[in-house]
Length: 559
Image (tube, rainbow, N blue to C red):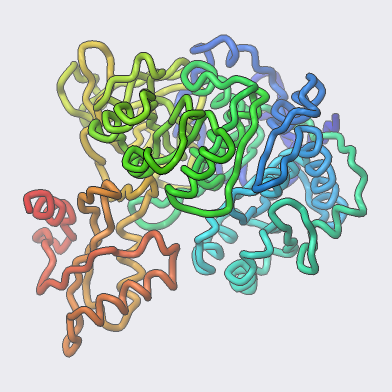
């Protein structure tokens, strides 16, 4: 192992960081603003050492442990073994260091749909001691430029199909000095500059011996103010999520074939369809198409045993059972938004499968409230999973009893560390994480979702910031004022709706609606656009002029 310690000790026992580039660590919140971390919940957590590289644990050690010839990733008609993935990740790590001059602690942006090469790049960054900044494929140039600047990204690895927006963002980001492109399965091509560089590299690599609390990834999530927040997670955090939910709730076996719809840029997808399977020697099936039917076809054709997706897909699946053979599926995990009781019942009636509902956040990295199928109760999210504690509190942090709605608070081996963001104190209070959900608990300790406590809109599993959409709409010359909220929708749980006051002389009709929707799609990720627009004469405000979005939500609920 490479032991390139260069910074001051930062952990008990004099543990030194392997990171020479301390940009991200220097932006961590002060210790007193961070949550209290608990590693006593399950025995696996207590066994962690001071030094840990997640790539070593999940890939190198699996190969050394006898999984070299076992499949790990499938894509269309091709598969990679654990040994194949190790070789390719080693070569990419060499490209990063030898060709790009990457030093430990550097941030590397990854941009692709869920493909085997994205996974290889992800592990290569960790092997080389870098920090992954994985982005949604749908992000536009302005969104990418913000993330590149915010995270201090110097290297980007992207699928050849997603070059345009990235190159536009790179033009305004002078710190981004290296752009390399790849294809889904390393099939090569004239634009695949990463694969050309890999071909000249040896297949062995000695992983950097990172400290367990060296940063491994920065996950960005939209906040209620509209500015994405960078959530920081360590190598130890990545291992912790693999030793809690999939071990004690998901109960993955080496024979499982797992698929799902969430992108690896979502930590729900990163864990569910990559890290969790690899922790237990299972394999993942990626698929290039999108939408529920593509998911069903994949399960049917490739005999998938477990899937991770949002409630909207399970709702659609229950209605299409006569079209697809889903008999291989033994387990479904729902997250991204609350799972309605009606959807749980419909899916159970159609398949006999008791869906697992899960609550997780980017700040906490993955699921922390759930229940195994035999313990799942429809209409309830579940209990705090092994390794975590949870409670419901009032506004002052006092614990509330059964049947009383309040703010959800959580503690465990993972927690919120925003990168240089004053909103840290909103999420972490007195050592507890507050995800922004209103819950109530019953006499048996089951948590039941009540509502969001902020302006986040959750639609088809996507987190969408209302103020972010408002900021874009206000850039259009026709918009004088606007407010964006989530409104209930049978298929998507919620949709984005904009209430708009137009400027004088503008025709508030269908043509303007289409124009504004297209404008939003062109400026930010298309899934954020307002599916409904209502033109109004005025917006509800306080006496001091503050926008009252809650009144708009109330009016929509009543209607």
